[in-house]
Amino acid sequence: MKGSSLKYLTHEGFRNIWVNRLMSLASVTVLLACLVIIGVGAMAYFNINALLDKVEAQNVVMVYVTKGSDDLTTSTVGLELQKLSNVETCEFIPKEAALKEQIEELGGDNAIFEGLTENPLPDAYRVTLKDLSQFSQTVSQIKGIANVDSVRENSGLASKLMSVRHAVTIVSVGLVVMLFLVALFIIANTIRITMFSRKLEINIMKAVGATNWFIRWPFLIEGVLIGIISSVISLLALWGLYELAAVSFKDVLDALGFALVPFRSYALQIFGVFAGIGVFTGGFGSMISMSKYLKEQGSVVSNE
Image (cartoon, rainbow, N blue to C red):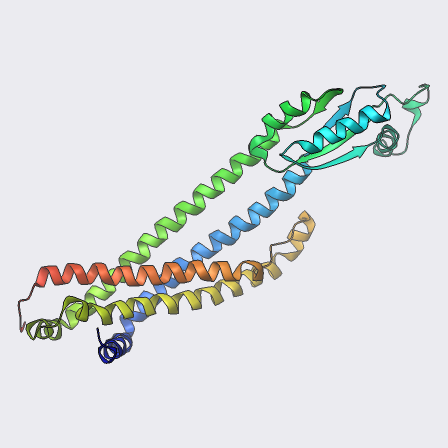
């Protein structure tokens, strides 16, 4: 395709949007709504993940060293814990600090410990894990370390957290796929209506020898432009709605001790997804409609 032809066909694509502005507006509106809903789902996913990460960080495993172990043995246990690939942090809790912590939890009342001649608590390590899906395997590895007396863990919470994360992922992916198909259907039908309104023009072009690609190009440009316009507007709309929600629910979130993740951190990623979905949906929708139309019409010239 020559440069002059490409320029002309691209211009025709822009002209199609203006001439059929009502239908184009309808396509942009539908795709915008779909993208914003996808964006809301994505930000909900990012925030739920952030919350789960916070909860996971608090889901610690307490590892108790065999009582009476000397300093070298206790240090060796710590080194072995740090060698485990799934261990994120390993904090040493000396028995003196553990006793002090227990007294503070009892409101400073140490009467329960007055009759004891020695500290009944062992040295321990507070361990956090990188991946909760490997929780059970890691706990088993910890229990296998020499001079580890016992392990206190909450495998039930770990399992529930992984189930929630898995469910959120499935729902998010399902929502994206469903809305993508809706947007694809709407845009394909919008382009198809545009083609029928220019049926005579298309048939004349076919009659004088225009190739299918020459005919397809303006409609392809039209679909892609609808996708780009929708993605830009969707990003701005989503950003505004997100900031509004952050301000509106600030008191509630503060009371829960949770802050929404900053939209700016994900803006580029979301725009990339929006642009990709928008351009693909617009372009692919146009190609589907054009291919079906040209197959139906063939090279027959009609003045209907």
